[in-house]
Image (cartoon, rainbow, N blue to C red; front, side, top):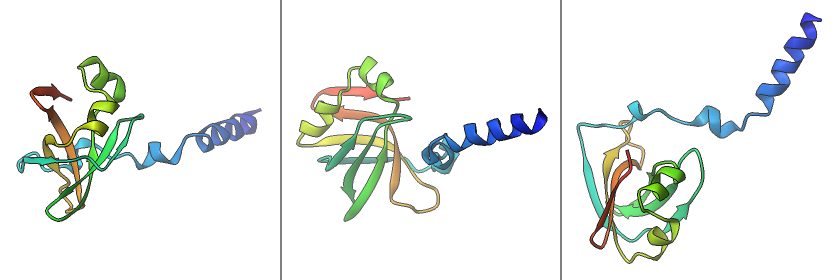
Length: 117
């Protein structure tokens, strides 16, 4: 009977998406080096565990880690707003390891500013 429990547990773990294991914690970002970028968003993914986007910063593409979609929508930020904006101001923190990725705390489109954390 005990072996059946181990097999069931292994099968349950196998069903968890790889992205769950790959998800990084916020400690991966340098909170002592805030950045502010104003640029058009070149791609948006609206999904969980959080939305993502891409912008060009410092002459290269940067991945943008947003908040969970339910939180962004509750605070008035929609996918269409990010996709349709000519320029978006993103304020947040870069990855500590030098990867071209930033975790965003605030998004401003026009005169509307949305706090994500």
